[in-house]
Length: 271
Image 1: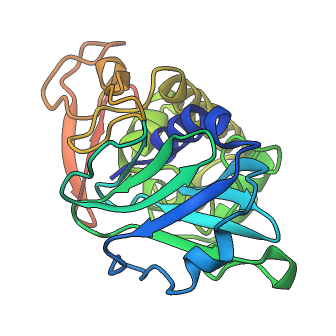
Image 2: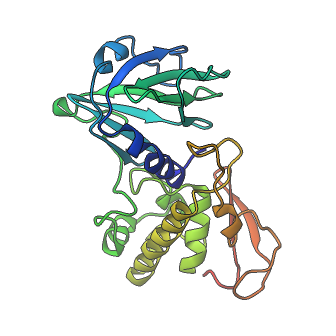
């Protein structure tokens, strides 16, 4: 699934081509996504000028006053900027053609994504209403994580993957962050000290920023808007490396399963 770094990489790739352009035409080939494309979407956004491209968690927000286009890439979606006349491929479900001639094309083989519209002046979209702070924002700090972890028996890995606590810390990035912070993934969140909470926040920031800089993790279905794969997987320290030597102490990396998801950690470096 495209995670926060992949979505942010996509945002940075498409933003210069969209901002200041008008949407000349909207073509919906398949509206039946996880959240169906509204029937009136073309009428709402056709002719509108795009004033910016933002991100909230894993959602892309294309500002098109008086409203906002909300895009989610689901499990296998991607966005491409294609030149005029480019024939659609299978699973190319929707096009936004700009007055520059380029078309922003949504590709989603599994149809788990979304292309929606809402007016922020009348309230936040329900998909955004309960999201926690951004992990790279000022409100996500050690004091916050320490406070929200008090009294919680859930594992610290599950806590930081909860989008109501903090958005965008997916499975890969959670394992990598906990390794950098020296905290085992099964540790009860309520047992974190204030110093450990601060250390974990710093680690989450470092891991996500490094992944964004390298274009995200190479996942089977994710590609940038220019078709290139991410390269952060080449920098993974523990994730996907069972029995490989720890890059710090050389002890074998352990693999466990938590709530059906794989976790990797060093039994020596992480306590």
